[in-house]
Image (tube, rainbow, N blue to C red; front, side):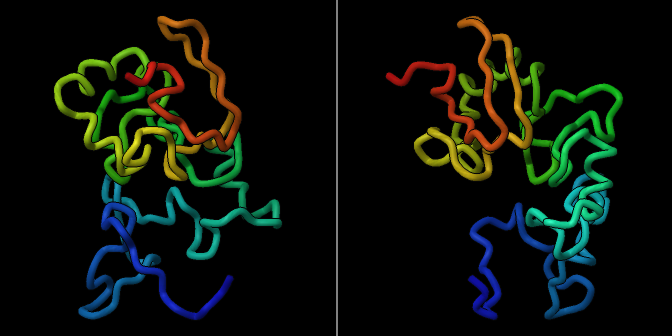
Length: 161
């Protein structure tokens, strides 16, 4: 519902750069992020962040990653996927099989608390943990398949204790 009221950001990792382009103004269209690129490089124009009924609004993302929506596939820009727990856009971890194979040590070494920003305080998934496309991963418990839009939970693979 449109109210005319600006949305308050709960976490500045997802906000515009403060005082950009000038003091007192914080505008998305001038903000930069990952690799000092303008936010629109991945998210599209100011009003293209949300799903669009206009097919031409998704041409860039479809050409870069094979599906519409915010560019979220590391391979859209990187020829090899860097392995990181927090150096991706908005402090994200690597997305894909490499993360599935190597994230255990990070979580066990006290890094699990950083998961809550996207996966929720209960690690059961949240809107920011949604898969942008259907994905399948090989795990020690077999192949796990997730439909596009699935909110990824730690417990999709790991048992809760």
